[in-house]
Image 1: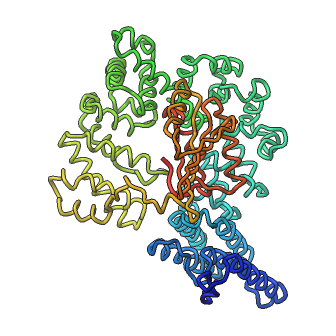
Image 2: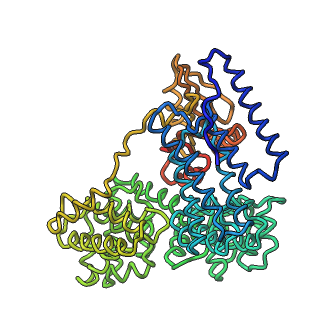
Image 3: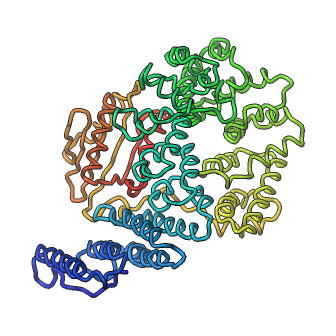
Length: 615
């Protein structure tokens, strides 16, 4: 474990700074030479100690701290890069772990700590979360609770596969994670490629997200080669679609119908070329529980549902029989699925028109029974939207009072069981639109019950979620006011509307933006408008064909990288290659395009590459 040995000397002593750097580098070389000739005295985790010393020296002084020109940030950095790493090293030394396990833990920690440099050292909060999570993984391995721990934060776990790749539950976790972040499961394939379970993980990921995995269908790609060795009939179908119709085919998304004999691959490929037929085919498949290609279906439905809704929005001046003619033959399940996948852009009048047609088509079927029929798919989204558009009471009236209570209890309970907080956010968003006193009473009681239940179970995630939700009832509560007020103070919601300058600039006072434009119909106009913002003497615009680099001319450098809208693929690829080769970390990532492309930008956010903020 690294120990501070005091200040060597600094530029203030009158020596040129270059000599200081040379001296420190020479000192490091001497340490390495001494250790290499005295292996008996060298600790097994010496390489971690050396890297801690390297981080300590980023500010030019070896003193057990990293000066970030901010007292709070400096103190935090010391606790993470020095004290926390030391604590992890002591934990790894536990005699319960054999030497092979210890080495794997150390190598995993080292693979992360080497990424701390002048550009990333300010990301103290991110490294705090990362190393504490890895420490939690080691503790979970010690207590035989690793799987339960990993699923609490899928994205973070996928960034630390090296730490647990040798554990028994690694394969089951990776298959679980493929439903949420298949791109990260595949990006990290090289970490677990030599494990016996690697082919199984590829097979299951391909069934969940064939659109994601087809990116790897290149002759010598390790993932593609692993799939070609597979005997799984579903995987063989995926490969056959690629061979017959190429990666551009939308037949991959309709995999469930192909495998179950409802469509031939040829029919699926043809349907994929007709937007309306493709949408209806996807809607029909998604109404099932656990269909094949579920992740790809979700992504495509968001794109095509939003495009379909935009057409209905644009017809808002037309009579309803004209405006909604395209959905008259839709089933209730298809109308419902179109609604819940288009919440980002749906107009009030569009929602009302679709809702009215949904209720008419349901006839005597209750809303409670109908939600069960669609597998409760995005039912919280539907309740939130119905509340926001003033239609929740009408929907609830289609069912018995008992079913109303059961539905609202289900709406507000079980939120801890999801990989992310999206479902809790759906519930939180609905609160401001719900005014019915009976419903509010049910929600209050459910939140209080769930909080107390998880508090008793010492379930941190559950108590945190329901503690945060208690904030919404402090002002509106008519019973147990003291209880809600007390709990909400423990889980207060911070103001996230501001970002300090110190978090936006690295130690070299450089701020890097990465902006993604997409090839939609208004991309050119938007890009042109974007460039005009920087058309003055304070900025320099460098046009590189498929992308632009915009640089500020003041002391605090701002470098903005943006692909051109007609170069969505090659431009974005070139920018990502630049950032990877130069080890740049974007301080800010910006999505510029319609909401149905947002998932593409989100998938590009890698935990080990992002510093600071994304917008």
